[in-house]
Image (tube, rainbow, N blue to C red; front, side, top):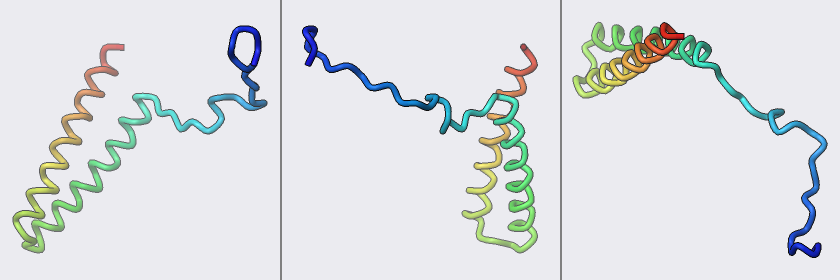
Length: 80
């Protein structure tokens, strides 16, 4: 221990950002749009195959939630 009561901190020789997977809002929105497309296709297939109503409802709710978030990103990005 030093006189201040704390041991010196050893600095690692790599950047703190090396292992980060950070997305910009543009990138996140693009990924979300891709997932919305896949979920919309899944919903269409479920409806065409007369799947269980609970499963259709769950996928539809997921799709609605993702579309809402996409719209929020759009509003944010539009106000840049």
